[in-house]
Image (cartoon, rainbow, N blue to C red):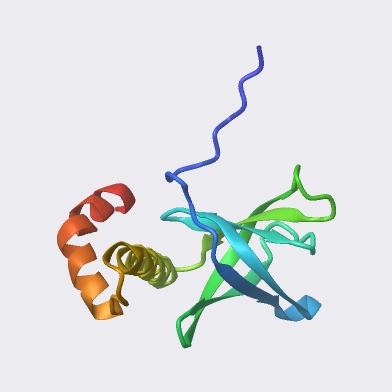
Length: 147
C-alpha cells in the first residue's frame, strides 16, 4: 500500500467567497471564488493553470472594501468536478497577509451570522449588533480553531 505524504501544515476550513486574483507578468486577471482557507493559505478555482512559485495578488471584497493580499502559488491540480478549471493552492507571502485574511474570514463569518440572526429575529440585525453578539459567543472558539 502506498502512502502519500501529507503536504498540509494547517487545518483547512471550507469557505466560499468571491475572490479576484491578478498575475501581472502574464497579464492574467480573473474573478473566481475561494474553496477553503487555512492559517497558511487558501485554495481557489481558476481557468488559468498558473505555475508553482508564481507570485500573485489576491483581491478579497468585503462590503465596500477590497483587501489586497500577496500570495505564492504552491500547487496546481485539475479540478475533478469541473473540466477546464484548476485548483490553485497558495500560501500567504508574509505574516501580515495571513493575519489580514484571518480578519476578513472572521468578518465573513460575522456577516453570515448577521443574516441568520436577521431571519431568526424577523428584523434586520446590524453588523454592529451581530459583531458584538458573535464575539461574545464565538470568539474564543474561533481563536482555538484558527490560531
